[in-house]
Image (cartoon, rainbow over all chains, first blue to last red):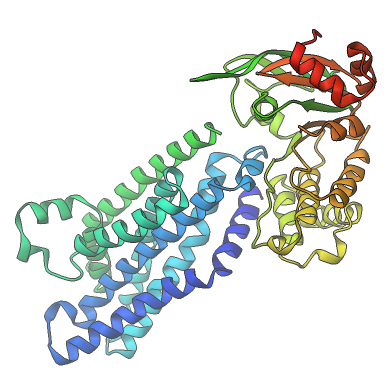
Length: 243
Length: 243
């Protein structure tokens, strides 16, 4: 009940912020339209719609990181959270209460990307539904990074760190905008040691039903998500005790 | 049983002793004011009693439950109305009240009944559908107090409840606080002399983390030989009159 009440409040906060929905859903759409227009004039294998859609769907999740970080950082800066700390809410209630409302927003973002992809020429296949399933662990990863940042930084700092750094990391190290094999070396090693490229590869493999290829990437994404969530809980607890 | 029993309660921060060896009892149903200039230790005392921050040493017992060892039991019977207006500005008045009802696990029917009751008590009925952030400062404080009371707390902490309010809004809030006398144990922190004198059964005056004296406004005036409470307060703080 406590969790439900807190989640319901967070859903309202998200839905009543038009910037959240506008950016979260609008930016990936604009990106896909732009890159498809470029592809129509200068064909590049990387930007073919079947290859591009998983990358844009995952890149769009970096905005979900920003939203989750902003939500928690703004709450930390307000007296409302102090009031809630004196209620029977536990740290787990807080973390789940911030995470659960963002999951459907993140999955909706992926659904919008794929619906647009159909319009832009993606062929239907039942395995495409698996790409939506893959959106769940990916969303968990990106939301947990936001919770971690929101538990440490102020809402102003979050804007720079999650808004600029996170979107750049997600863009450069995910293999969406250029083939990491073309760069190779240390850059490729670093990229594959981080979860972003695995999130894209997970979606690409799930999209064609190649589960044998998908599972190693799923392990990377879920592993990172679990570790980052544990870190977010620890940091949230720490700042709860530092009032 | 005492509502609150503080035993050598102490809070030491790296550069300052915020609360120094506080020993105090407050009876059930009493309206007790902690009075002092800025930095006296009032808010830190409330934060410790409300389980927001742990004491460095000593303990306090709220209706027999330790704030160190029984935090969950303490949280179930207290409520805090923080110094800053602690409402969710994007939520309506009804949604703010519903959020707090959810924190205490009330069923939908019980929550609706309690929302109706506190709305009537604080005159919030005509404003239930308005966004909390659009209310005036006085009405936000009323809502903040209503949110604190919706969980039927046995002990209520009011941290500077009328700070920044105009005379009329302050007078209205005083009436609401007076109405709680005998029903709920209220710990009020303030640095307004007239507020402490007008509302409280007893007053504790703090300076530099130490409790200098405790008594009714009349007792403190008599102790210091002053006719006006403001003069008595100044004398206590300047000369450090013993308990």
